Image (tube, rainbow, N blue to C red; front, top):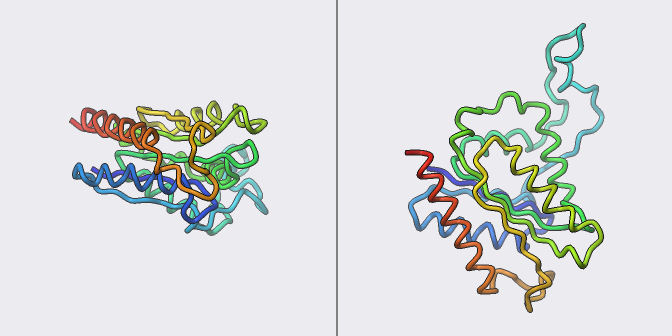
Length: 204
């Protein structure tokens, strides 16, 4: 069984990276093959400078899509994600919105989402963690709803969905590490263990 965690952050080692690493270490200890995909390490480009190559199947004169003209890491990441039975998604809040990296990554999937192995994905699981303080940032109250829809749209069984409000903790969430908070560790442990439990039940 393989688990992949996405740390959707523009920072190299931010809180979402810490959360993802913590969860994967717990899965590794339970015999699961794991991989952390840190968005910081990849080229993720938004839709641009195109001619709707991904929608040409709707054109009665063409009837077949052309390859996306953007050459970056988006497609390889999605193909890697499809190979896993467990997917964990960790998303911060930037300026009251999901990171632009996530929006670009999600939207670019329209170029090849029809190729996803849906039979396999229907027997796989996903859990999400959103870091947001709705009372601190305008728009942040919208992020959990938006990301829950994104997670539900992955053709997997949704097991867990955590919203971590960094303002509830004493740790400085910008210059320190929220993973040091025992309550956050407890919540991540519960979500990770339950995600693994359901993944194994589906596999059997």
